[in-house]
Amino acid sequence: MIVNATICGLMVGLVACGGGQRDPAIVNSKAHGACPAAKDVWLASFAGHQTIDGVTDPGHGWFLPLGSKYIDEPANPMDPAAAAEAPMTAEEAAAWMPSGRPWMLRPNHPPCALTYGATYVQIVADGPWNRSFRVELKDCPLPEDGKASAAIVVMAPSEPDECHVALAHRLSTHTDWTGARHAERVPTELAPLVGTPGPGQVLLWRIDAVEVHGEPVFWSIDTSNVTVGAPNDECNWLASNLGMLYIRARDRTGSDARSAIVPFTYAHDPEELRRGGAMEVHQALFAALVDTRGMRSVMMTNLGEYQVYDVTEKPFRIGHHLRWYIPNEEDYASDGVLGPYCGP
Figure 1 (cartoon, rainbow, N blue to C red):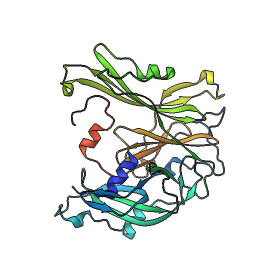
Figure 2 (cartoon, rainbow, N blue to C red):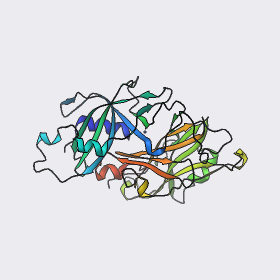
Figure 3 (cartoon, rainbow, N blue to C red):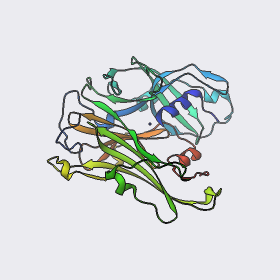
Figure 4 (cartoon, rainbow, N blue to C red):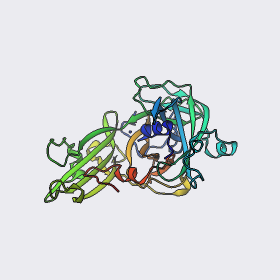
């Protein structure tokens, strides 16, 4: 297996002003210093010093994953040289480097102008063989507490000082099918979306939300109805898993009395995707970008990839999808599972 500490550090990093009476999903006017389009929203990762298999990785700081592509297995896959990082060629840089001026956006921080440092290409074989591309980000502070392992990066011609990051947070969770712990309360307005268990079943859930001005406006709700079977035989229990996204919709007047929570659906137009494709596995709600016009985009993440939805007008669309690392089947199979897991 060829995976060095830098790639592992990035894996850890990428796996977390509303408009008042205006509908945050409808208003689409322009504003100075506002959030850029979803196609210009990226995700950076912070990598710290790590030691894996006795090898200490000296590289640390902010990095911007750029993408990956499948390759054939090297002739000598165990050769340490195969894992060595190398700079991108001019041709690779032209293909993978983003256009525009990069700015880092973090909660409770002003926008920070970034510059690019060294570029890196590495062969990775944690799953299918692939080449992973990334670039060093410079001139912005490192996390104060070492816990902020990821940050939004946007491409904008001038400082996006009216654009703010609303990070997702865990609203409610219940993942204990044994009954040993009491389930957390589900907000009343979400209870019909979570549902109820059937006969002989245990209902598990995980709810994440993004809030604007203290009001939840976007949710990811994962549920699993587990049919309890014989004790110590959890691998043979049946479970139905469902992951859904929801957005708060209002009428044109913005009346809270007529607001509703509706399933978030989007048009899939491959021509609009910068790298092509779309996430086909579990999506974790990471953050939303908000300015004085309301919520502008929503980012979902998964193992080694993310996509950004444009929520400025209907039909909602995927503005940016990027896969920078291709995990193995085991990682994909276990991600997002709430009930007993016994392998892919």
